[in-house]
Amino acid sequence: MDSFGLEAIKAWNAQPRHAYQTISVRPLTCTIGAEIGGVDLSKGVSDEQLAELRVALHENMVLVFRDQHMTEEQHRAFGLKWGKLHCHPVLLAKKVPNPEILEVRNDSTSKVAIGEGWHSDATLEERPPMGSMLYMKEMPETGYGGDTMFANMCLAYETLSPTMQKFIEGLTAVHSGEVLPRLYGFPIPEGGYPETTHPVVVRHPETGRKTLFVSPAFTVRIPELSQAESKTVLDLLFRHVETSPAICMRVSWNQNDMVFWDNRCTQHHAIFDYAPHTRVGVRVTVLGDRPQA
Image 1: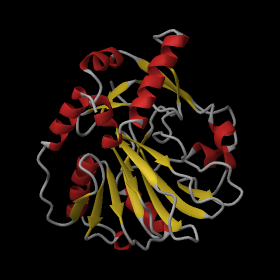
Image 2: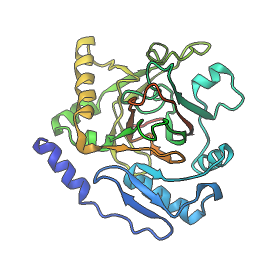
Image 3: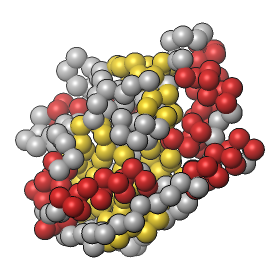
Image 4: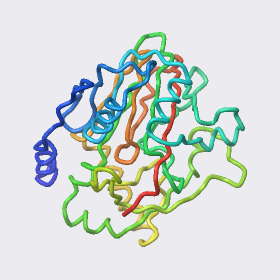
């Protein structure tokens, strides 16, 4: 890690941590992720717990709830505690009865895993999700595999040089779903997938932190630059996340685990190392606001 990155990591770890009263919070790394205890999501959460979970999400960005036993309605109810629920365009295209709950299934017929490759969810939309909650219903018969990697995108920005930070803050980026049919075989909705322009650097609406808001899954070009310049800058930013393990973590799943991540300041990458076995999760996603520079 260069001196810019090291100083950013030092500053991040110098921040004081909150003292929790109604939940337990065990950080999983120094820079992202925590396991949450003292919460039974099937019974709901109190107002005091909800307030502390919000603080924990801001501090850690990814919250891991182990050994939860929830129905889909209980899962949905927890999501509604955080805001209106998002309907995935894939489910809208299929016209399923409940497009708020997305099944994430991979089995022996899967050529790629849903969520493989670094991305934030649905940034092609004008209002990308605030966060997603994935509940693991079925693990591979081996009992392991299918970890998910997460990256702290605030630190992705902060570990860039000040000169690069200043340069990219004035840029926007086009987010498109053009790769989804090719990569995952998703159907194309009537009228096509949306295409939206967001700032390259956005500010988290609750913490105020600047966060890098581009990903190889959805970001296709920077309109203020030439095609060659755009590709060069985006490739550099994508590579920066891929080669910065100090800002990343890896969640190893068990059946009945639930993971809640802040989509506004993280990216994630599903690891497809369990083929030809089956792995099934269900995801509830909370609607967010339009990203602001």
